[in-house]
Length: 215
Image (cartoon, rainbow, N blue to C red):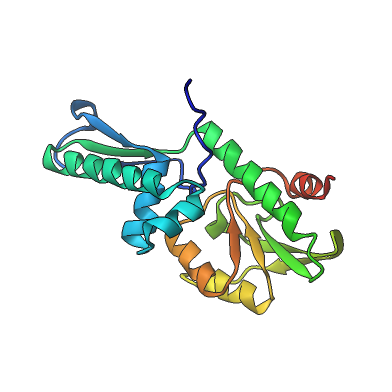
């Protein structure tokens, strides 16, 4: 009997990424694809320095699975470097769907806590959700208490720069930032200020709030 693949929690990347030799066109090269779970295990263990047990808990898989993902991911990277192949990483629609489901589920749990919870949405000039976080012109900050919205604020965003938004939102006592996609460097800045990032959100603000508040 074939076992159903266990759901793995992986961090978002921006659509698709190619790494290739500089002196040859893409259509002449063989492509090596790194799967998202391989990429995530490499990021957690080789980049962030986490051990395999901790990485397994974060990704919701066993230590043995992490070890296999690391071995296959590292082998693919070396294959691309040694034989001048294209290294390819891509998100797919199913991944974004699961990522959004995970973020909504987590928000539903967080707003039930008795403490105040401040959630920030990046917005554009029309105060609609801005999928590209770095382009935000304003933030709509929604404050929850015991599962109910108690305050809405519209705050003009400062001039964007490395670490500026995380520092600014920290001063506003924001707990969570909702984003469609965001770079790893920005995620690290937010971690320093203990602000949680929830990825994969691309609906309107009102639709997102409706999904969060649904029983």
